[in-house]
Image (cartoon, rainbow, N blue to C red; front, side, top):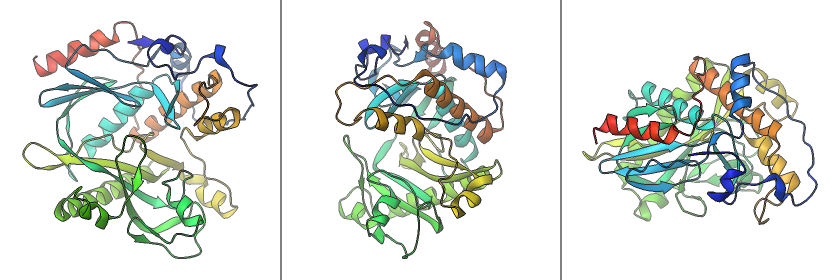
Length: 360
């Protein structure tokens, strides 16, 4: 289902409208990153206001997440990755081609990490959609970190600067500063909850019966191996894979399986490797390719946690975020981005390809 940012009000009421400004907005300068082709620049401009905000395949039972729409079909799960951009547990904007970037980036990594751990990917019927094998998902997210950074309540740096030296079963020395590279990669698990994530130690996972000791050890080993591989691949492309999250489950035959996106711009933090050392030495924030600038704009212009209505994100910021997603896709994969235009027929196209794939 195609929706412009205004039309989406009917489906997702929290998506802001330019007619609903609460206060004068403040400008925040944002550097343009990437060197995209004129064709891609034109596609981004044309795609603004014609994003995939909500899908309606008419197949199985639908569940709507923050970014993904999921359809349960017996032993399979169809996942449509939309262009929704969320933060602060709110829908902030619709970003051209974001869904395609996330979906295809994750597929790219899944094909290249099967030697480390099996994954649930079964088919890729559309640039915005995948068919996954249904698995029994563990109620734990495995966050792996190679640096001490972050600003949220669950970030490692937030706890460390407040005096904590033990976090999620890991011990850290005194004297670290924000954005330092850790001596070794660490796993900092969180429990999956509807309203918020809760940091938990590996021992706590077993004590609460969320996983067995054997399951926990196997998934933690897999998470660290996936992250190490991701760091090596990113480094070859001029990137630092800073942190990420993984979700695992059991396939019908009991095999431990990766069940969710991997190393995407949404699930991971990437910094530009070339400028990290110099900027860190001068106590400057690393150059990142992420949505933080959009989060900061909303913090500047409203109370995103408590305001009933949010201002509409400026078009130039949404366009820049689309550029960054596509730039990161091209840097990671080494492949040119082929824009799949969202039209009024997109739902029908996805549904038809899913039916053909699964022979429904």
